[in-house]
Image 1 (cartoon, one colour):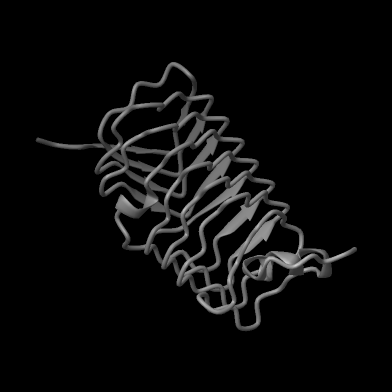
Image 2 (cartoon, one colour):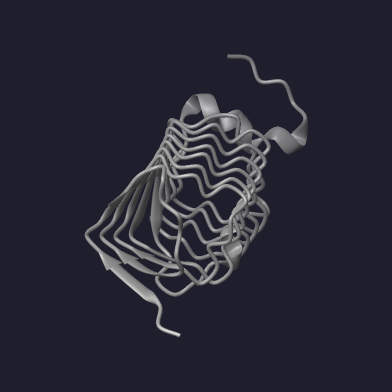
Length: 187
């Protein structure tokens, strides 16, 4: 069976996904919620205002993909094809998603909500969390070296169980590094 190859196309809310490879495509307002995008390939694509909630991503390829203003609740990025896995998020809702054991160095998370998102054993070297809400996000044995958290908030990161060498934090966010000690810090 021949898979579809589509390049330089733009899709809107009426798009019905067909398994294949999409390169340099733009998806606007598409609803992928509860669908199965397993083994699809997306290279240099942009998703604007799309809904991916509870979408299956088994062996899905994301290379140099941009997600803007997307609803992405409960996604398992840890099941994606790990070869060349690279993406950025701007204004996205990534609550209850999982990046467990992924290698996503230099990933940019901007103006995004990451409530209860699992970053256990993830390599986030040089990642940027710009103005992100990390309420109850899980960082456990996570590589956060050179990561930038200066403008993000509501995170709780244990320096004893995560690698944070040269990571950047604001003075207001330092309390998120001391949560496990149950101490009161006055501002």
